[in-house]
Image 1 (tube, rainbow, N blue to C red):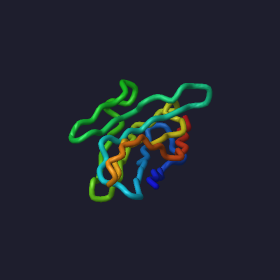
Image 2 (cartoon, rainbow, N blue to C red):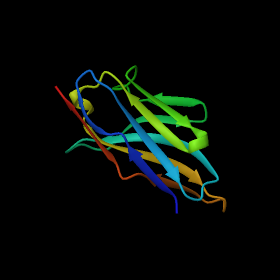
Image 3 (tube, one colour):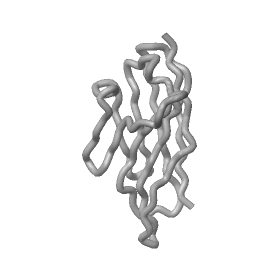
Image 4 (cartoon, one colour):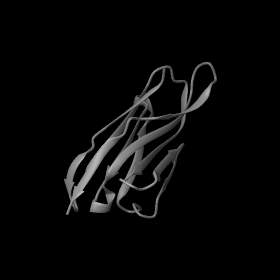
Length: 119
């Protein structure tokens, strides 16, 4: 009964910016960690950014260009993507570790949002 819904993907030119959102809804007691992954055609899904508590971490390929943030009051994570490159093109997925009021902790995935960067 927990859902993650991503939004904000689309088409951008190289050097441009996009902002992705991931909203968690349902019966949520707490969110331990939220992450963004991406998967390009023919490639494995890779971890892009993590936010847990006050700490963030990034893949080397996006450091200095992408910023992950979180609004706890809205159970929403964001991924601000600047200086986009064609190689950033992929389906971006949100992942969250969520605890319900029944003290059950599970891993949840969103449906993904397409990001396409043209050169």
